[in-house]
Image: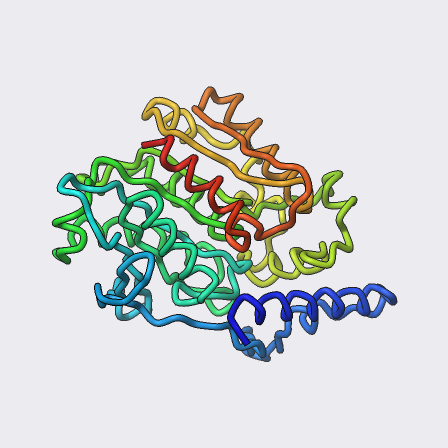
Length: 336
């Protein structure tokens, strides 16, 4: 079975699984829904085997882009997959630092789903892409992933790898993430805005947030409307927050709800730096109201933000659907 057919079949089975669970919603075990076993020591056993792809540094292979893996922090077991277009122009290329999705608890930089997206991203936007494999919750609850998301910027600054030193224009760096990765990209941006001198020559020019994963204790209309959505039911997102947030806090904590305290004074720096921010979303995603709230917050701070919202769709469509990925690639090129 081809990978695309495998994904379609898996999605269909998961949808049936969710439907059967919601026939008797009072008996739902969200961790069974996520195919997780909670262990007594606070870790989880992940029962699903997610397809993985190896890096492809061979220029003779018909891949969208070259790729290779490099260690970021050996003690934390963090690493990054770097993507380089096959035919790089003589001029240096923009840099995109990418953070994968998965509710903070699933996937990696090697997951085929994100590997294919990043390879196409590098090729179609003519960019160097650094995709971070950060530490996952609940073994490493937030802010561990945020620490990793900033550490990779310091690593890029000091790395002597020729794919970076020969091909990257460090003055044009963008942080991008999908779903939980969009949350991480946003929080990495907030942290990076306070240490711009420490990460030079890496100069962040903007954030590209693809259906970023945010939450709150008060339900939004889209969460209520899509509470039992087969693609991403509300009980699943609640459980992901329970596994990833620091112990003892709720969904109105700043990590999950960017609107608390008016977003913080750091947004004024992002405005002054002239960063461009793009937020992608669609009406078929229960998170869409949270994403619209973020755009409204940034607009209120006079940040240069654009909301790219589409009718229909589902959570994950901008990575999983090639035609919607093109919309992301087109916006990235317009930022350049």
